Image: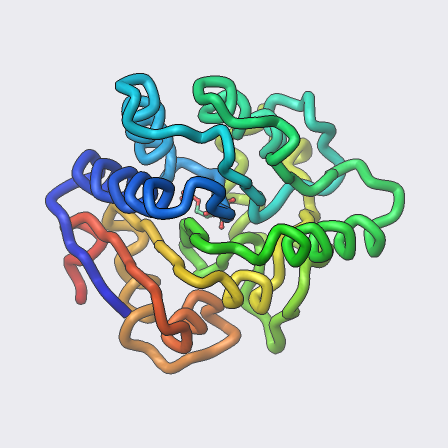
Length: 241
Ligand code: F6R
């Protein structure tokens, strides 16, 4: 694991945007795996800035998002569809035919998950996967468990995740209890992975991720088994390493 420690969130975002931009320059039709949540927002803003300066062309870039809440339509303001369009896609010249997100209101879960897996394969696999990490070590919505699923699947969100996400909803009752997520195997098949983490709250889980034993109870520890992982941390989150 290549661990990069930078001063603060702003530097983390600049560094991550530069790494992604370098990969797009290297391969114009790169397949990116994308994450939502607060952590990558600064990186998306950095990429938009680079696009506006004419430094990146997204026209051939393909994207797959990690996850989507089950039961939320693409138009729902808390859906990850909505987040991605609002935060990133609407600001760049990406071709909407090349954007893939899981359908949170599918009436056939197995078919939807298989469709996603098949599309990733058809597009040649993920070249670069961006990840955030949950306070409990989840990747995508692969929650701590006795066993982890390899492929895209429906998952019951943990109490910790439901509570962590309540800030985005009016009431805890509105927070979806389930989500569709890429599996750990799908994530681990990416050629390169960048994990971003910031803030003191996540420092215990970052210590476990980098130094702890590989355990399904901290899903992010599986990244220790991947050959090309870069972890970008700010000083706060790295303070206990
Ligand atoms: C989001 C995702 C999640 C988040 C994680 C951290 O697509 O897959 O695993 O990356 O919950 O979220 P933030 O960045 O909001 O702390």
